[in-house]
Image (cartoon, rainbow, N blue to C red; front, side, top):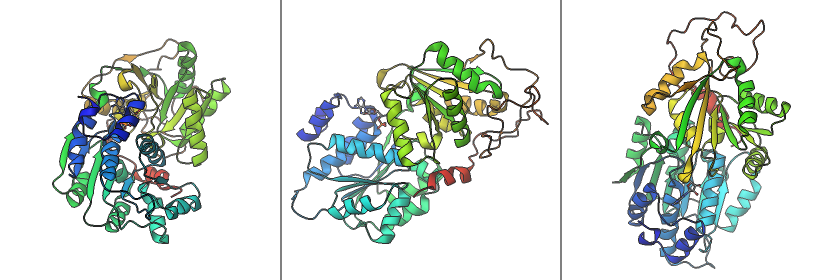
Length: 436
Ligand code: AMP
C-alpha cells in the first residue's frame, strides 16, 4: 500500500513525501481509514511503530475537509494529551511537519516552563493543542484555555498516563469537552484500567492492534552481559571505548544512577549527559539536541524521561540496570533497530536483577544469551540483595564500589521474593508530576 491510496489530500501527501515516506507502516495503514470515516479508535501501538503519523495525518485531513476562514477567530478543535513533556514536544513537531502546507496553528503546553508564553499562544488562537494533563488543568483553572469547541480528542500513550497517576486529571479534562467529538486512544498495553477508560469514552471504536515491534523484530540483537553491580559503570565505559561507540542511549532505574553514570563517563573522558525528571526542561532539551547532533555520545535516561523520545536510527541501547517493569524493557529496546536499521540492545545484569531478567524473558517469550566479558567476570560468591526502588543508590547498590572488597554487607540469599512486575508508583509519580 502507498500513502497515495489513503485518501489524504495533496498538502498532507506533499509533507509526507518530503519526510521520505511512501509506504504507510502497519498502524498507519490500519488506523487512517477508520479515523477518516469519523470513527472512535482504540489502537494498540507503541513508540516506533509510526503511531504519531497514524493519528496526525488523518486528524489534519479531517480538519482540512471543513471550510476554513483564516480571518475568523480560532478555537481549539483538536486536543492531544500526552504523558510527558518530551512526547508532547515530539507530537507537536510531527503536527508542524505534516501540517506545514495547511493553515492550522498548533501549540504545545506542558509544565516545567513559563506559563505566560503558553497563555499568549492560546489567546492568539490555535486549532490544535498538544498538552500534558497537569499543565492543561492549570490553564483550565485559570480560564486561559477554552475547550468547548474540541471536535477530536487524542490520548497518546494512554497506558503511561494512567501509570503516572493522571486518570483523575484526564477525566477532569474530558468533562470540559463537548459530548459530541471523535475520540482516539493509543496505548501500548491493554490493562483493566485502560479497558475501563475506553469503555467510558470510546463509542463503538475501531480496534487496531499492531505487533509489538521489538519482540518480533529480527533487527534488534539482544544480549545480556553478566557483571557485578559494582563494576557496571566501568564495564560500560570499557564497552564504549573498546567498540568505539558513537551514540548510545543508556537506561537506569533512577535519577541518581543516571547522574552517577554520566559523571563517571565524563571523568573517564567520554561525553555524556543525563536526562530525568529533576532536570529543567531546558537542560533536557539541550541534552537531547546535543545527543542527536553527536556532541554528546552517551545519553543516560530514566524510563520516564526517555518515554517517547524520537531518535532516529539509534545503533545501541544499553540497560545499565534492568527495569523493574518487564514492559519497560520492550519500550527501551524499541529505541534501536528502527525503520529497517539494525540495532543492538545490551543489558548489564547483576545478581540482584536475575528475577527481573526472568520476568523480561517471560514477557518476550525468549531466553536471552548471557555473555561474560574478560576482566569483568561476576564474582560467584556475591549473593543477591533485594532491590529497593526509589532509594538513593538506585536499585540498591548501583555502581558504587562496596567498602571492603565488593562483598555485600548483610547479603541475603536470593529467594524469589521480589515481584518483577510491581511498579513503585509513588516514585514514578513524583518524577512525572514535577513542574506541571
Ligand atoms: P512513532 O512510532 O510515531 O514514534 O514513529 C517512529 C519513527 O518512525 C519516527 O521517527 C517517524 O518519523 C518514523 N516514521 C513514521 N512513519 C513512517 C513511515 N511511513 N515510514 C518510515 N518511517 C516512518
